[in-house]
Image (tube, rainbow over all chains, first blue to last red):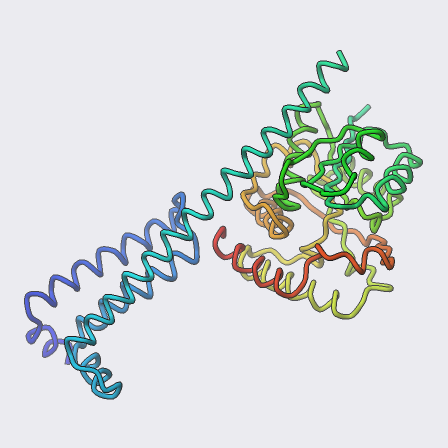
Length: 125
Length: 221
């Protein structure tokens, strides 16, 4: 069955498979190396997104059947799928920026508070 | 003689803060650092009269306040740090037992409400157990009270522990750090005094905050 699937795959499908595999391997490596910014939640979302790309590249018929059941045309289905991917990426980026800003604010506020400690130490001397 | 510092994060605790600090002092602890987490009442002024007080200009959460206090204690040469809440829930008489255990061999002593749940409301027990479960799932270490703020740390522990979160998820993050740095730890039963005041506080951990805490634990895991 796998042989039959592999022989039927077009150039663009191959391209998507290679790209998806690259990102999945990359994310798994980053997660297990505990690289900075690679959190559990991001890891799971990356796997879902790139796993989805890989799955639909290997089994485009599933996407076709799904779109038929949902009453969507083929082209529209692809468009919606990529739309979701883009929206997910944007949400991730925004979350990342918000979290970074939150941390930066905390650091500034904490450093400011610790300045009072220096004054206290000087006073004690 | 070891330098023992007590860190108390406070947020709008003016009604009970003076009383809490006086009670702690009665037990002979005079190195107290209160970190006011952007209170809108006069908690900071009250604390300033009683001990060393630091102020976070805007509310950044319990984790940020405790972290600031610990950093201050390190700069002042602390050998042992004890963290406790500013609402008077924790009984300072338990500090002695904690210090004894730190002196014996432990890097961290965790005060556990669930080892002595007398008088603890059922929903708080349930809430804590859920917190323990997720802390265990995400960080891989089972403790009986992952959300307790009453803890003692050796100098080695405060030098190694590095937290990133600002709010209530901080307490669970400490558990992660204990596992990560293979710190020796133990849990002891602590007495918690549930008063009308502490039960009616708005800024306590509730269900919605619990969900937010869980999401942040996942993000920072």
